[in-house]
Length: 400
Image (tube, rainbow, N blue to C red):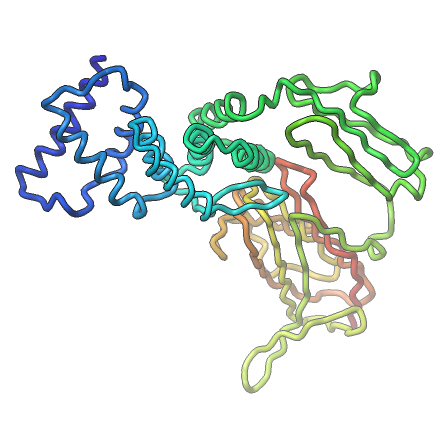
């Protein structure tokens, strides 16, 4: 009670300052802290606002209804909940409808909003998604949207580390207490690999408590060609995901490209010096290189979602030597990463790769003549190793 009274007193002080300094009360005087106050105050409807504080409360309550469109989606969710609990249910549903219209929906990622994470508390994506789930559940009772929004939270955790205890607590709260109970139902997963069937209900399969995670390995002698035909079925509520790995040995120049949600492409160019300036000439296995040629390696990475702890390994032929051998942190393309040059490959370590397309370039010199394998370029999210891709193996020819 004392804490709530203190908040009411502070909001009155803010309002009194507007009167004292003769601020125009018809313009937007609503800060994010005032919105947070309205949201926090909505949890304590049984504690009446004192008469001396009610004018200030009503003013900011009205400001929220008047200027809600100028605020971020986190604040809009708080405004919707505060007004719904305050009895203004029509306006609260209007805000929810607006949020629904501005959302993004996909089968893979569920329902979410385009937003950029920042340093301020109201720019936290996990806390924002959690509060909006609370708003859609309480204000609109839209359980379909709630389940779709929970998918985004789970898929975000698949490739990202939730940095704070607040983010983790908020996410766990809405995942377990809003919508369907994900831990109450234990789904049955059936994976059909050609003629072989793997089921989570098999007593020989050990599952992780809570998540239901399990894995199984198929020895080389049991692998058949028809196992490339994979079908997955699921009984139960909620979502499930997994990955299939095929490990084998092959000559590196015969390995085909493999791409998924995290992609990498590599191109090799020769720098050609002309009277009109320097140009880049794409090279292939049929175009021989000469000792002393200067090459540019261009790596293009594409991520369909935010990912943390991404590793790119770019192998190079033994006939090529990097011009820059000093390992260091770099920043380009809006991406901060650590570049490390080793004997057989150049490594790039990216702590955080937001959804998008990125291009890295670095230079090499041809130092030996002959026919060489230029290796592969691989990319992998170390936080979620199932997100991995690699380029095809290629050969290069060099002459004196």
